[in-house]
Amino acid sequence: MSYVGQYEEARNAHYLGRGAVYFTPPLLPTGGVNTAAYGLLWGDNWPATPEVPGQPHLPAGRFVGNARGLAIQPTLRRLTTSAWDARGNAIVESITVSLTLYGLGAANLADALHGVRSQYAALPITERVGTGGAGIEAGGMLFTRRLIDTSKPVTVTPSWAAWSEGVQWRRQSFGVELLAGVSGPVASSIAISYTPDGGAENIDAYADLALELGLVYTGVNVVDNRPVRVELYRARPALDGALTPLDDGIGAVTLNLSIEPVRTSPDRPAEWLRYTRGAYPLN
Image 1 (cartoon, rainbow, N blue to C red):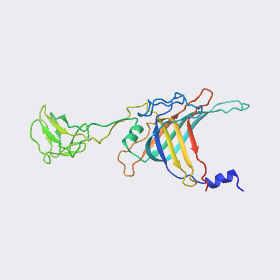
Image 2 (spheres, helix red, strand yellow):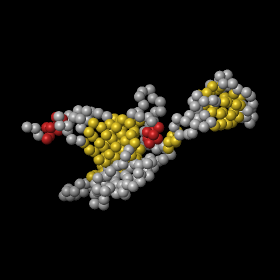
Image 3 (tube, rainbow, N blue to C red):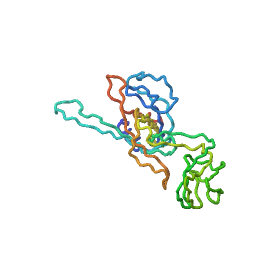
Image 4 (cartoon, rainbow, N blue to C red):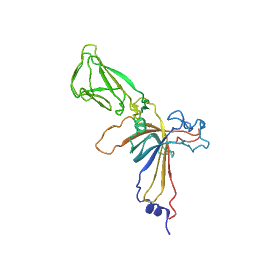
């Protein structure tokens, strides 16, 4: 004969495993889906409040990648009450969540940096760089506005001389590298014609400081094989983490989020997140 407490202890001695992360549109403060807050094409006929009070429902989500180290940290405030008052005196002031994403894709970086992600058409363009009175040493770089598709033709034409590739300059993905020093005459310029890299992605960081999203974290405990799901209804990425674009190890993004509550009906308490565990396997 076994007892529930002993069963739990024996079967849940450890929690091991990693989870998958999905970003979704967040919920409204009333518990409905805010389809205008994050992404596109999530559907526009969600009700303003959940069909069943107390059962918030996040919509479909974008797969972000695998993650580890999900940590949920509430901040409580204790009210000063009479010792004879049997009611609870704790108020949840805030909840923060952090996790490490194993993915540096542009969409993930844009979300982590409150950025706006964009791509450019791969059509030939010409840019003009002012060099009047400029003195640039060999090895210097003339940066183009967009990344260069180095497999396509590139021409560099100064206004005062004729240059040859491999002699005065050579192409790089992010501009034109000078192989010889330049002393630009008065009012001179250099025209650079190239084709932008159509696969490049541009992120204007911190351009969307009101970014809010929903987050679902799913995984399986490798010890007892129980599925686990955590749903964050309203999450705002915090802008207090450091970003290392090129590191000396495997790239990862540490994402910190502040959680906002929802209230699915006036007679219910604030709902911050939902933690769900599946049943034990029969074997």
